[in-house]
Every structure is written in structure tokens, then in C-alpha cells.
Length: 293
Length: 257
Image (cartoon, rainbow over all chains, first blue to last red; front, side, top):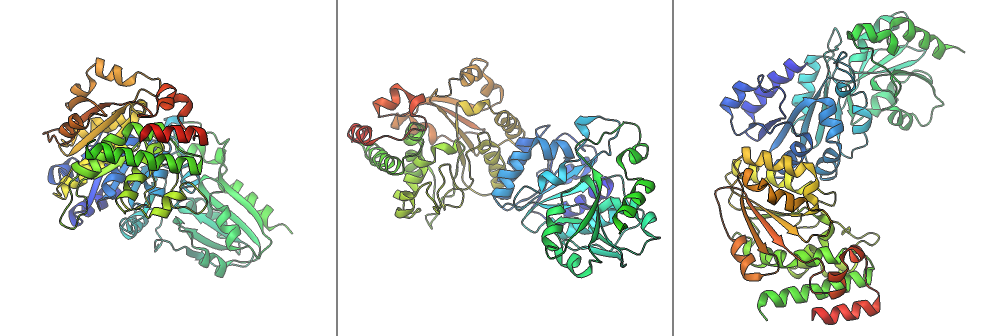
């Protein structure tokens, strides 16, 4: 997904003279050529995430469209107050592209994990959140949202779905219609649940934009009152939206996703999947429990 | 009394009134920067033909917002009755600097935000080939925030000759961070033009604020917290966020007259 981001970013730098890419010591080589072409609009301020976000806010206040790229924990958790005050409360537009998702860098350790990115960013006023499932989906959503005047977080992940959907910013996709339950699945988690859900008569609604949350599609397509929420970060980030959208229903809910006690046991991503409860057996067991009378 | 002194006197009186009436505020910090702000807003900052400022100002030490509000009110940018409601229910004005007020670009209050924002603003002005400078006023204690150090490093890379950073050296934080920065000639290492000045000396301040250099200008303004009110000058820590009672208010009013 990073590779696709780099391609799209280079196109935006070429096409939009107000765009400015701010690097923080990461991806210097990738954008070396762009820096040579657009020396004023590709800047590497150095490894200083909080100041970089503040600097970007100053630029945005004069009409520039800033793009900030680095690993997710440094961009989101280290510079959280700047994101909140300098962009969220200030109502400025900017683009924050965080790589590494929750545990993409499995072998790096806690410094490079960021499973709380989406839940904490959801607490920032005006912050839009995009969680694409594939590189193609990222490209579509990035182009749609980058210049809409709001701060937007794009969650890049190397753990992707096998197939892309025709996504649209702010809209959910219906993957499958059924009767017995509604499965609400976010971004790259679709790959983990699709093989299980094939044999069940359930509706699957796929989200790639978390904020703004598409309540209408959910309200129009809910099947019964049994819901499974499948998220690729600390689970529960969209629970408030779902409860709000379905406030007239008594709901039975099962959740799949990381929690605060989730542990990454280094190694490769696939080696950790069953520890996290994303494997087919665990998902199936949770679904059976949800469908119990 | 010079016109500048008269304006400072008049604004201090107004700030005292508001602080007494609302029983809240940060008077000493507002008094320490007032000479600087008056010079900026009434003389130094350039306007275009529509009388809109082409220079920009960010008050990074947002707790001294009362000084800025008083000036904006005096310039009719802020409605008179708004300041009366400062910090009260349904007012537009919070105790810290609030960007929803015309003339205030950034909300501040959490220290260490103003300088990075000013750096980005100054850079954007250069890209857009806009005239004018960006002034940012930070506190000496605020220099402890690492984001300032980061922002200075970024500003050097950007070769900003349109950025003026004024440090309110009122020594109130109890920290000697600025002295340490000076001792190690950190600003000079950062390739800034540095000048230290008495922050209440109208003539010296005017001269330094009008200086244009080919690099970032850092002005260390030696100020007195609570300048002009003996109680605040003698015990700045006690008065940091304290509002005067009636007796104290009347005495302070007399002192600033």
C-alpha cells in the first residue's frame, strides 16, 4: 500500500501546486526524485513529528495542502496533541498517512506497533479516518478526500485483502446479503472473514471510511438484530456509531479485533493471526455463538 | 508621556477592569508583553491598502490573551461587549487566545505550538511569494517545550528570513532555560540573528522590531512580569492567575494611571 501511496503522492505533487509533502526522516529515498523536481514542496524537516504537524498547520492556514508521512505510532501517538489542537480544533485541512497499521512491523516491538490509531483519532473533532483494504482502494479514497478541507488519516497496511471493492469515500459497500446476521467489517479484515461467511446466510457490510461513518447503508441493510463487528485495530472504535445508527434495535453483538491486552509475538504477521483470534476457527466459533437462539 | 505610553496605560486600565469584573485572568503575563504588542499592532506590523495586516502574529503564550484582546477591542476588531463576557458562558472569548476572533490566527494555550505554526506560516508565505513577516511571541519558560527546538531546526532548513521570534523573558517560570540557551549560544548556533533588548523600552523595542535580516530574527525581550503594578511585580507567582479584589483593583488602577 505504501508503494501505491508514493505513486499517488507524486501525481498529486505534479497536478496540484498547493500540495506539499512533509517528511520526517522516513521515505527520503522514495521521494528523492520528487524533491529534485519540487524542491519547495517536498521537504524533509527531520525526525520531529510534533513540530512537523504544527508546521503543517501553519502551512494549511495559508492554503497549502500538507501531506505528512511516517510510521503510524510516531505520527499519531507522538504528535497527538498537535493533531487535536492544530488541525482538529483549528478546523484545518491536512493529510496524515501512517504506515504500519496495528502490527505490520511484527518483529519490531512495541515502539512500532499502533493498534490504537483509529480509536484515539476518533476522539479528535473533524478528523476523517480512512482504512482501505487494498492499495487500489487506498488510491480511490486518497484522491477523493485529500483536498476536502478536513484533516484526514489514511491507515496504510501491508496486510491487504485479495480483491478490491468499488469503494467511495464516506460510503460502505454491501458485499453479500443474508438473513441471519449482519457482519460489519473494516478494511483489511475482509480477507479473514470472507472464507468463513461463505457458508452462512448473513449480510456483510464493508467499511473503508470510518469517519464520516455511513449510517444509512447500515440502517437500510441490517438483517435481524445479530451483529458481528470485525476491526483491524483496538476493537470497539465504531461501536458508538453502530449503536447510534441502530438505536431502535435490541442488538446482540460479537466483536473481532485487537484489545488492550493483545500481544504480538514477533515473527511474521500470519504466525500471530490465531493468537489474535482472526483465524477461521475462532471467527466461526464467534459467529456460531452469535447465531445461537 | 509618549503616545505609546499613553496607549499602554489605557490598555492596562481596561485589562484591569475586565479582570476585576470577571474575576479571572492572567494579568502579570499580559502586562509583561504589552509594550511589545502595542508596538507591533500600532506601529510595526504592516497593512495593505485595505488596512488589512500583511504581517502575521501568533501569540504562542496563549494565557496572555487578555493583552491581545484589549488591543483588538481598541482597534474595533473585537466588539466592545465581547470582552465584558470574557470566559463567561456563551462568550466567544476563552481565557486563552481563541482563533474564532478576527485577528487571531491560531488558538493557543498549550505551550510549544505557536512557533511550529509560525514556521509553517512563514514558509507558506514564501511559497506564495507573499509580502510581510510572521511574528511569534513565546514565553521564556515555554522554551522548555521540545517542539520549539524542533521548529528552530526546521526553520533553518527552510531559510526563513520572514520569521521573527520574540521571547518574553519575564523569568516567571523559575526556569533558567533561556540563560542556558544563551550561555551555549544556541540561537547563534541555529544561525539566527539574536538581539537582547529591554522589553519595556519603547525606542529600543521599536528599533529591533523593525529590523529585517536575511535570517530568522530572535528577540530576547527582558520584561517584568506584572509591569507597572507593584503587587504583581513583587510576587508574580502569587498573581499568575489571580484576579484582584476591590481594594487591590483600586490600588492597581491608581498605579497604572
